Image 1 (cartoon, rainbow, N blue to C red):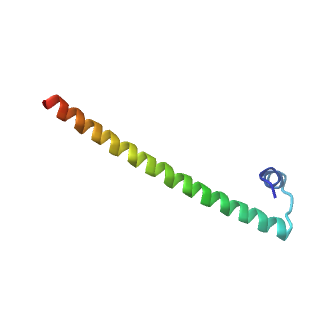
Image 2: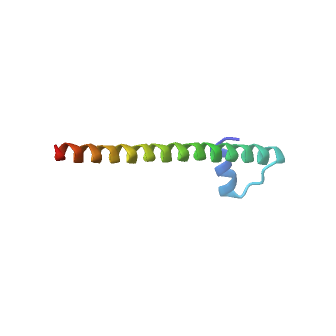
Image 3: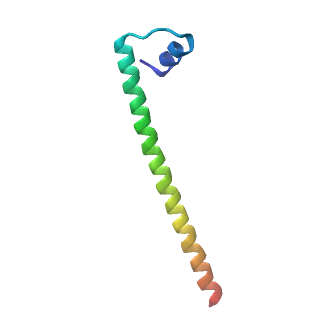
Length: 66
């Protein structure tokens, strides 16, 4: 079942067969896993950026002292 079909079924109150419900549930689980992986990647990138920023601030302080 495609995302467009899922939305159409939900928007219009159509009933799904058990197979369509199964496919939709699997698709939603895949989306949830994908979103979790994206979130983890974004958090890691943010942590890396903050660490780099701290290093740059420290380097600036050291350069200013010299």
